[in-house]
Amino acid sequence: MILFRCFIFVFGIVIWSASVCAQEKERNTQKGGSAAGTENSKGRPPAGFYDDRIVKPEQISKRPMIARVIVAPFGVIGRPMEKGLNYVEESRALDRLVIILNHPNIRPVFGNLGDGSGFGGGAYLSTADSLSPFNIFGLGHITSKRYLHGLAGVSVRPSPALGEKLELFTTAELRLRPEEDFWGMGPQSGTTRTNYDLQNRTVSAGLTYRPTTNWRAGTALVYDSASVFGGRDKRFPTTQSVFPVDTVPGLVEGAALLSPTAFVEYDRRGRGNAPIRGFYAMATIASNDSVGSGDYGFWSYTVDSRFYVPLLSDGRVLAARTLLWFNDPKGGSQVPFFRMAQLGDSQTLRGYDSQRFRGNNAAAWNVEYRTDLTGFVGAFAFTDFGQVFDNRSEFNTDNFRVTYGGGLQFKSRESVFLRVYLAKSDESSRFFFTLGPTF
Image (cartoon, rainbow, N blue to C red):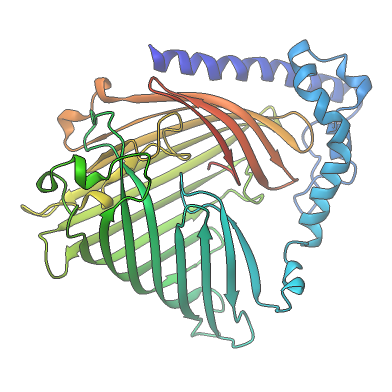
């Protein structure tokens, strides 16, 4: 019943917006124009195209009452804001921040390090083309909740004939995540929220190859050593104090894993991080085996596919995502709890708390309807559904979880830079303030 209501919710908004779009398209046709053919040879709208999409005061009275209430405040600031965003995008003003840092190969980094990690920032350093064909790079990023990501690496493009198609790399990483949530394992995990401190030290070496613009593939050998401690969030008990240590694999000793991995990726989206049409898919496979103590061994498989379809115009888009995540234990071995599939964050089941569900396998779907309100403000409605499971018998309708919601997104011509929205589930309502798109 909840799933049905969510589909009705999104479907109703799609139908309402489509009817408005049809009326606008008819008016444009009468003026001698149409939604088609508005892009220039570079794939961008011609000059002045976005000026018509800014809501002017005299246009507000022609819209339905609900649209007037939502759009009116943005109509006042829309034109200067959009011009400013487009200038930043076209002039690459963010790239010029390196001048302030007095170094051409330093870029600022802003944002979080995962759901619930707090806001933070740092810097990315790179030799870029100064040591071509080699590139030495590093990253330091810390958040308000003391989450840390440090990275150092070297890459090389060994063949001038292949240019940028083939790249070899090696990296070393440190990740500190002191307030990770744990609610239990399985599709019917309890409602007791605990937290743990996860520290990862990772070394990897591999290569990537891009035969065409749309295709990319790669392989790597990854060594990851993870340590687990009591969480630092004093609002909730530590995971070790609530769950018996012999029921949660890796809760005491952590795990060190050696993982040969491979992936293939196909991308036909374009238009920055706010695609209006196209398809994306990525599949990975890895064989994971413990090194040292602990009996851990499993195959892991992930598939992430997304598609985007414009509805009558480029300003109205239906976006959908499928995420499949499987861990197949080898023989009698186990999967460490922190490497299990997880659902419940700003990317999957958005109405549930962070890392709410955890199991060997997970399947999740996102459906979003996005529509432009002005040139730089858009609205969206969504529904998410999915579940975790350890075996096929657990994959059933009783264990499916559904969330839904909507909000506003702020964007430039080709990029979404901020989203503000509310997500609801049968357990809670969550308010999100996120940088960048969801998918």
